[in-house]
Image 1 (cartoon, helix red, strand yellow):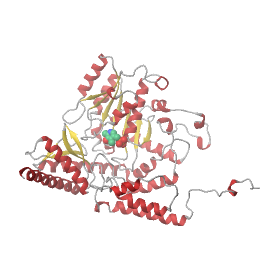
Image 2 (tube, helix red, strand yellow):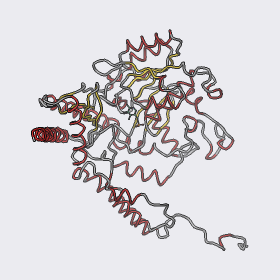
Image 3 (cartoon, helix red, strand yellow):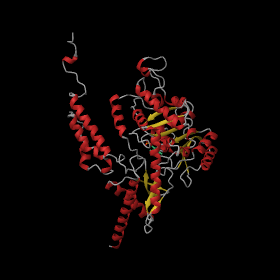
Image 4 (cartoon, protein in one colour):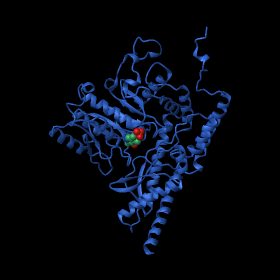
Length: 499
Ligand SMILES: *Cc1c(COP(=O)(O)O)cnc(C)c1O
């Protein structure tokens, strides 16, 4: 009977463990290591540089033969695990990195166990993603027929939103491309807007020149009068303004544009209104902060991240589109091998597969870690942590203002504080260099990890607090070390100058 069975010649294999009991033991140990790392994170350095010999060891040829899982894990624990970015540490304040959560470790593990492909079909993961999208619509006041998609981050959210905006404006673009209106389309954002929108416009074939960068006021918010003026000038010159982007929390200073005023301009001009709310958008969770975002509920599309100010493990972003029909029209495709929809039975059932709302077909189960986070902590706890980070930023700003050698470079609206060590005896160039060096000193000593940026041309130590583990005392440690390192360096410069 089974004489034709190939398995008789060579035994069939799978990738499952030969001995589940051994694997179970190793897996439990790995979970313990993960919990040890997180629960004792405060005791170690924020960051340590991966040594050259470890970098070298990672550059190896394709392993042709496998090795026992325990051995692989040991290599990981020795060579990779100690060299985390630092954003799991309470004194990481660089860029805008979320902290992650203990519950997310379990959520990610169970995501891996289910290994769902969330491109579509009728299974639990799809319904979890739908539930998460419905929560987002509720949080931001979007209508019932709005659509949404979980994505890698706000860069992807901006790309998808601007694709929908472009496609809604340019007739037949999916078939004909940009032949007709290329070079004439114009998009507006403030000079402080995030570069991901520029990248998106480049990828969309509109070019970075399509983005008109509108100057900001003293609080780093878009000057809406200049927006109106630029649109009028562009129309007069034969351009076609079709979209404006408002920032809810700019990357440099945390400024929030007057979203309501930009929404009104867009309504008057028949333009699409997109909001980049990467981190600041989630201020909508807080009764105290939500008024800052007034007008966000009028957006045609919105991009924001769960991995920043909701601390969900990377990566987890979201795009919402007010007109779900336009969103779907930009991406839907129904080849025979993806047949689905009404009346379909079994696993292939279900209208509106996620793959019809973005460029990806196979997609991971990002929704589960978001679902766990929201269920475990509740929206109000996130609101409290967001408010706490803003209070910590105000404390930091107060300390900066109280120190004669420190200078605050921008008003503190939310959670971003830009400051610098600026003793009066130094030239502007020397101050820039000094602050760059102080930040590198902080990183290399493992004490704290702010980042740098330029504010009105001057180098700033930039502290963005999207960290539920930070305490006010951590910001005091930051300030104390900036002063100490700065003074030591100035003394060194004086000594070198007089030598
Ligand atoms: C981080 C950020 C982005 C990009 O989001 P990713 O999740 O990193 O892709 C866009 N806009 C702003 C304001 C940001 O802070």
